[in-house]
Amino acid sequence: MSNSNFQLSEVFDVKGKVALVTGGGSGIGLMATQALANNGVKVYIVGRTEEKLKTVQQTYGKDISGEIIPIVGDVTKKSEIEKL
Image (tube, rainbow, N blue to C red; front, side, top):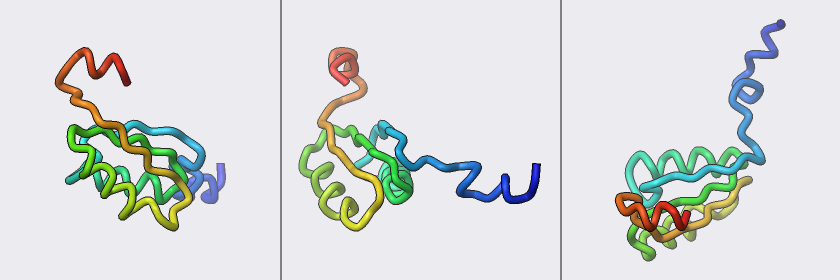
């Protein structure tokens, strides 16, 4: 293996992948959402507040190679987890 195999884009290429981020409306979840979407991932963000999720989509979903898709849900409730 050559050094080129260890380029960050080779080791952590996530373009075209799909991710589900809980708590994607703020904090670490928001940062993970931004990082993934900026690197070509279709990111579903789950949170309890629709307005907050839509704001994230509108604010950070522009000029990126991925996509941010909000899903309203409460992952502390089994019935809502099953819907995901």
